[in-house]
Image 1 (spheres, rainbow, N blue to C red):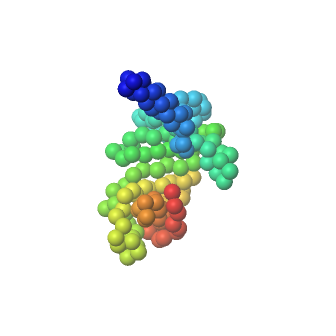
Image 2 (image 1 turned 120 degrees about the vertical axis):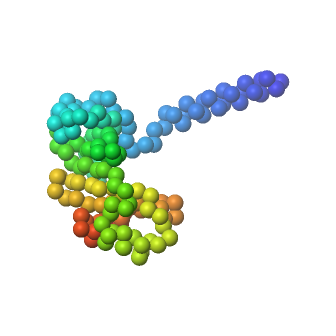
Image 3 (image 1 turned 135 degrees about the horizontal axis):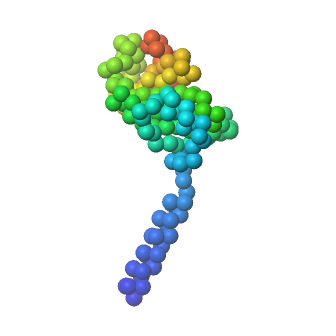
Length: 159
């Protein structure tokens, strides 16, 4: 009787694992079918790097398909985001919190003294718009503070 009970438990457990695996709740997924134009543009922009590609839908109604290549650039975790036509939309690189402009450090210390910085990124959009994104956790929710290149506060968003 106990072997039958154990067998039923094993079957139930395995069925739950397969159901959980079938429900992909992640926003982006690993992609091997990246358009040739995107691969070509990446190899021109970053000739010595080999990325891992992900695809996801972005935009107000998730109508825009983008491809994100994640790789190591200058000993930093980086990513390059391209649209389906191979246009570089954004480049992000991690930066150490000690490399942030003093204005950002002062703002974060004054406004969030008890919240440690968990993530800092340097984001370049359209090859001209440079911002810093600083992530902190407030009530178990990641809040991203966005600053200009000079350290001026722009906005706060929840991830």
